[in-house]
Amino acid sequence: MDRDTRRCAIRVCACLFLCCVSTFALDSSLDVSQYAHASWKLSETFGKGTIWEVGQTPDGYLWLGTELGWRRFDGIRAVEWQPPPGERLPNTEIRNLMTSRDGTLWIGTGGGLASWKSGKLTNYPDSDRADISALPAASIHALQLGSENTLWAATDVGVSRIGNGRVGTLNSSNGLPCDNAHAVTLDGNRSLWIYMDCGLVRVTSPELDSWIADPNRRVQATLFGISDESKLRLALGRRVRA
Image (cartoon, rainbow, N blue to C red; front, side, top):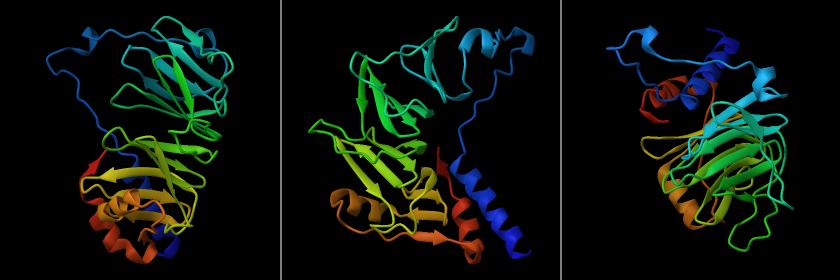
């Protein structure tokens, strides 16, 4: 296997590893014809803009993220979301939507992160709130829920952790081999896996815990490259928590 082929294979494996999701089977006792379904035409129901992401909040509403903003869908019609007076999202390009266990809808945009809960919008870049640290006003590429209602965000300036009113960012300044992160997930051992421009990176759970306790501490990260195929296959064989 030549170098380019090996590089391509590792990238494919990394994408599959970081993008795995849980799946649920249909009820085998029902015939396909017994399932009700409906369809909607984009131009008639959802307005302009390509739908990039879909999220759902505990009230049952679906939220549709597009490059022109986001809309709330109740199963009949989609309504363009309007921010509270005097507020706005950090960017109208909605790239990621994820609902946490407490019902918070996290919104990853082309220029920063926001959250929406109980009619309250919170922006994380350049926040004026004393109880929330500032998050870099970066493009959000992926979101991943962690334990205790924490959130991990892969951005073009590193990987940020949001939790307990604090924001911390890992990048090349404190231990990661590069900055631009495309995907992030946690495995069954609570190790952090990041797919970055420079390759697939792992930060172990003890390293993460030490960094969370002391955000000024540098982490020891492992970069899996072309020469680490056997180690990567072993890592990919472990169970991943989606």
